[in-house]
Image (tube, rainbow, N blue to C red; front, top):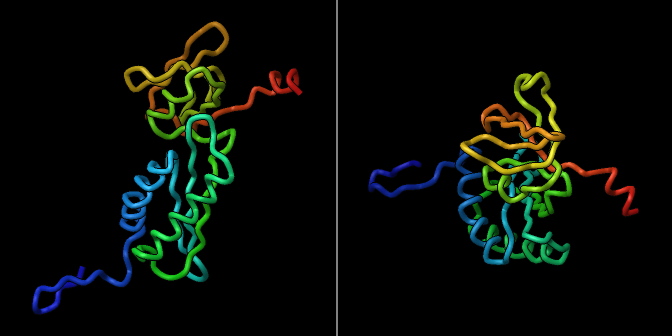
Length: 175
């Protein structure tokens, strides 16, 4: 922030990316929640040349429809035009996180209990870095994963990536 001699404060012309992301999230999360959605992830990037891009991944219990995503896109687009948080031109994309969405927050590990997940650890854990099993939840900052007959407990800070997985055996029986 720049101050004039009179003490008036003006925002600087170049705002750090982290500040922009924080302001966007503060504005957008309550708006998405008011529409019955959950802002799963917000990504923002602005190349040195060309248009920036703001990606919102939105979901809700039971899944989200294309019509709901389009409505959220229109509402968020209007909000961003009024508040002018993003410098320069940008594209806004609003989509679902998909069937194999990433698990990022402790809340995600509770929300998807009973689902098949694939977890990659930072270093080998119990002899392997990639584990696949049924998510049992989160206990004492450890992800509980049922692999076969045993339950594996992996500390959250040891997880590099985690995402929902698709049970292909189950799909082939249904299809």
